[in-house]
Every structure is written in structure tokens, then in C-alpha cells.
Amino acid sequence: MLRFAKAALNVSGQGAHRVRFSSTHAPEFHAKYGTGLMVGGFAFCVSVWGFVLTQTGITWNLSPVGKVQPKPWRDAEE
Image (cartoon, rainbow, N blue to C red; front, side, top):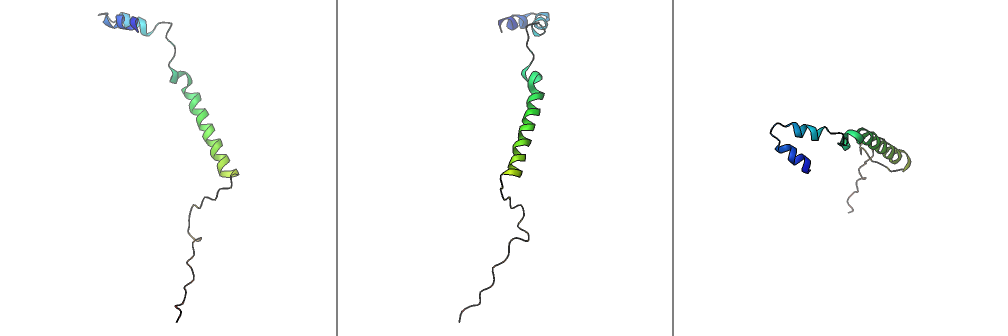
């Protein structure tokens, strides 16, 4: 960080260019691992939801149409 601060004070800007593009600069995390993490996360989500939808036996009750029936009307007792 001290090298960068010194280079930032350089009027010509050549110092900052040298610090930014030096051989010691590691690639950014997202550039290095971003695609792999996205693909891995997508595969994980698909596999978990695939298991939940097919193996757990959860009744999802997506639509009540045709399933909800009114109770029979009770005649008033006299």
C-alpha cells in the first residue's frame, strides 16, 4: 500500500502504472474463481431442488381448483 501511495503522488503517473501492472499483482478473486463458483452453485441448487421435488414426498398443493368442495348444507332443525 505504501508503494501505491508513493506512486500516486508521482506527477507523471508512471509510478502508478508500474505498481498496477507489476508481476506481483495477483489476479482478482472474481476473475479467477467467479465462473467456477457460479457453475458450481447452479449445479448445487439444481441437484438439491431435484431431490426435494422428486424424493421427499412433499404435497405441494399448487392449486385448490377442483380439490376444495363445499360442505353439504345442513337443514335447520325444527
